[in-house]
Length: 292
Image (cartoon, rainbow, N blue to C red):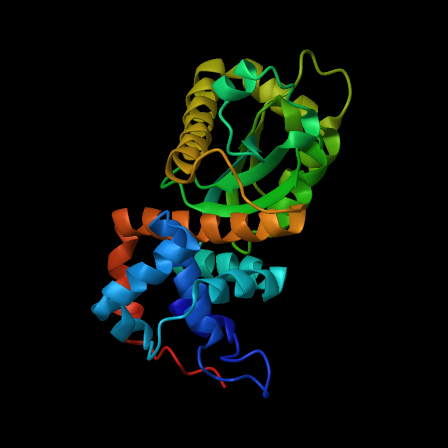
């Protein structure tokens, strides 16, 4: 609610709207659906039985299950990015960053079932997520959903550009090792690079600097690198354990919208278990339906 207010999201998409529900209520209901891991029909029944939640969301009527399904496709994709940026600025002033990619299936069939029916999994059957997290608390700072056959390295700079706060360190595996990415971390973000380099570095000023630092103090490098890599792998596993390794949607734009709601829902659950939940509770006194 606080993030929606600070984004100045309008209450209605048009002056000719029926004004039965607001955009804020739709977005919050979608987050509740993903947090509860429910279908659209189950979410409708959940809201119908939860009277206290209706009072908090100021719902006079329970929306039909197709209402949430249609509003997910109607909202501009940039709103989801703005939601994540405002949430990051609300709880953090600086951060460390770890970037990595993980794959999701576009079908609900399990690997054992697919192998039993002798169906071949093609590369285009995968959907890849490139996430940036803070290893200190696991909060997701930025993300990008791409096709499974796309390489991760070209999305390194665009994903880090979406992080609105300063960065102290940036870590990744060898897949993102290039002189362009190393230069961006040091020059543009003014951060310390822990991007692992491939084999022996023979060219590239900033790649040589990282290789030299890795060889001079291997114990310190291993300590920082392993800690941050373990954090991103744990977040990938947490994401799949909570929402499954399947992403719904008929096309990549629909899958990116589902992914945006799931990223926001996972961040809210992470904040609920951390000490920053007290800060959010104190800020709850801000008015909710204030944007004009």
